[in-house]
Structure formats: C-alpha cells, structure tokens
Image (cartoon, rainbow, N blue to C red; front, side, top):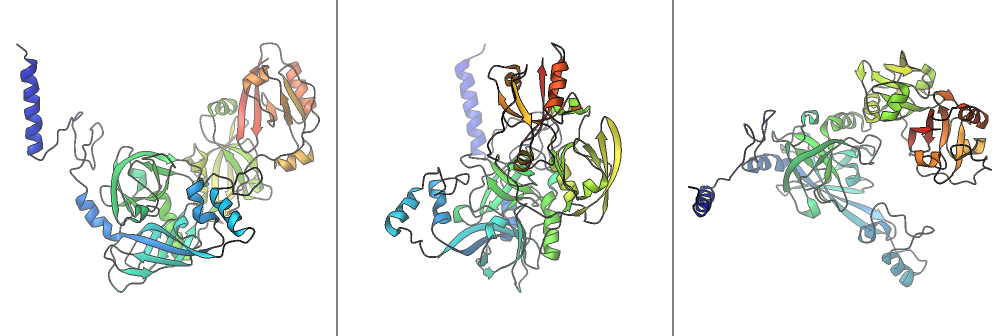
Length: 496
C-alpha cells in the first residue's frame, strides 16, 4: 500500500546521498551525452565545470585600455543621463541634460577645457606575432592603446587597421616572449542551445569568465549593413567588448560586441565566419575591400512572393545609375535568386556574398523578371562606404487630388518630391491623404506612400491610377505595389 510519508523520506534520503557524493541530480531526456558534441535527439547535460577551458583560454585574453582627448563634457557623462538613442543636448525641441544645465550655470558660454578620457575593453591574441583582435569601438579615435596580459605584463599597442561597418579592429604588440594565442573556429557549425564561454574585462574586472548557450544566430540589431550576430545568454557587460566567445573545444566562434540596454542576459557577438575574412584583410593591407554592384535591396515578404510568383530571393528596389548592376541591365523589381549558383533568400546573405567577391571579378546572377528566369553577368567594383540616409524628408505637400473610391488622396510626383524622397524618377503617384475608416485606411495605406504598380500594371501618373482603380469591378481585389520611403517595398491588397 502506498505510504506518502515513507515516500517523502525516500526522496529526501536520495537527495542527501547525491549531494554528499558531490554529484547532481539530473533528469535526462532520451540518451543524454556530454555537453560538447551531443548527438541529435539527446539533451546535453551541464558540464561538470569550465575550469580547464578557462585555464587554457584566459592567458590569451587581454585587457585593452585607451586614452583619447575629448573637447567639452558631452560624451564623457552622457551615459549617466541618457541612452545612445537620445538626441544631442541643445538641439531644438530636446531638453538639456542635468550636466548641461550645470555647465551653463557655472561656465556660461565658455566650454570646459579639453581632458583625457580613458576607456576599457577586451581582446584576444591571434598569433605569436602579437596580433590582437578587438572591437573598432574599443580603440576608435584612441591616441594611446595599452594592452595588459593575464600575467600582468603591459605593452603599448599600435593600430593595424579597423572596419567600422563590422566593428572589428586589429592591433599589434611587440614581445620577445612566446605569446599565448587562441584559434579561430567555425561559427557556421554552432547550434542553437550549444554551450559557449565569454572571457573579458566587464566593468574593469579582469579576466571574468561567464558561460551560457547560443540563444540565436543571424540576429539583425541595426548595428550596420552587415549585421549577422550570434545571440547568447552568457553574461556580457561593458568592458567585455572585443573579447572572445569560445566553444567547448576552446576555439573562438565570436567576438563579443553588444548588449541590449536594460535587457539582462542578452548579448551579441560577431560570428567568426564573418570576422575571419575581415581580420585577414586587415592583417595584409590594414583596410577592408568589399565588392559592390550598386543596387538597393530588401527582403521578400509573403505578399511580395505571391506578387512576383517566386518562392524566394531578394528584391531589387533601386538600381544606381552608372554602377555595375545598371551597366549589366539589372532593373528595379528584378528578383535575385542566386549568386554563382548559390541560392540567396535574404538581403543580408546577398550583401555578404557580394561584399566577399574581389573587385574586378565577374559574378553570375540568376534573376526573375516578369515571371521569367534570366542570367546576368555583373563585374564587381569596390564599394565606397557611405552614410545611410535616415529619417523622412519634411516638405510642404502638393495640393491633393479628390478622394477616390478607396478613400485615398493622390497627386503626381514632382521633381521636388523625387529629390526630397531620393527617387530615381517621378514615375508613380504619392498619397497625400487617407480618409479614416475608408477601405484604403483599413488596408494600411499611409500618407507618403508611393504607388508604382497596381495588379502588375505600371502607374506613371494620377491619370494611370484613376484609369485602373475606376476600371476595377466591385468586389475585385487590387494588389498595390507601394514604396514606403526608407522602409522598402510593400504589397497592399484592397477589395474594391
């Protein structure tokens, strides 16, 4: 007969025995194996410890200290009063920070004198020659760079090269002694849920070791045009920047780079698969050269795939005049489905593939145009990095047309509108108003949307627009090809 009291005693005794024996009570699912290299279908258990891994890897992780001259007080104290997204103090409509008010009160218009600002970061030794990998933002604008090893020895370092677009930098120290180093592994082989270790100097606390798992891969966080981050819950904090993310084999699979402000347990690392080529270029030439074909691209949503009748690929939204793509005959609305025979399904993939091709070489692009496949050969040129345009241009709207059956006010695109919105032509109509509660409103149209096609029929003017909309029958579904400035192409469906 089942005795609850006796059962509780049995469980308690089992727990005590396990604890006294130095073990842990594990609840395996299926056939559990070791933490590293677990077979599919098995649930890896927590490693007994990370002691040996930390002991072997830590000597190659360095503390990086930089010094730079700062004019005034602004940046040095900004983190006390606002986040990185905050507008610069003193701009119209933006309240000043307490620190700005302090200086205005006591110094008036006289700016505080220059001072030396120090910062801390991490890095890891790449080879015996003294090359060290870190983040660009750790050493950016630094006048002095000092490196401290785990054994306490300190060195002056020189900058070899950096790449702001991937936030990778390479520095070098000179040492007569053999230096410890870390091997770079292949981040492509990382699996979500796999154990990783981060080593660095968070908050100046040297050689801190934290462990966690790979939470996600391919994260796009808006850091730059080549976002492809590893997300991990291994603790990463200010000062960890530039330090290694290590797999259970002791290989560097990522460079710790960013955290989510206020998001405890969410850190990001540059994957080694991306970093390896950048590091090689920096070591050889001190700079990074990227391929470029001269197009604007975006992801294909489910609606866009239906509209173009494709299962995947990347949509060309703009072709820059005089650039390689334009010379090869590529057009807006083409869908690139493969590069040199390799399928592409995301803008990030396409950007990285093109960037990795040496300028001067030809690349074979498979595209879909008007439902038909076509092969185009494009000669790669060197990308000239430029600042991205942000924000929505402000201008006085032209006189609107009368609302139509969908509740939309439209007008032709003038040269001024095209210039303000950075359009390659005046083709299309722009929505200047949307009637609340109308079919257009319910479908999701907004002021500023630019209509280029309806049901694959080109819309070059308000006359074209009216002809198509007025000619549609009641109950007919209209597919609008809409360009929303700085947000990309969308397909909006409306039933008349």
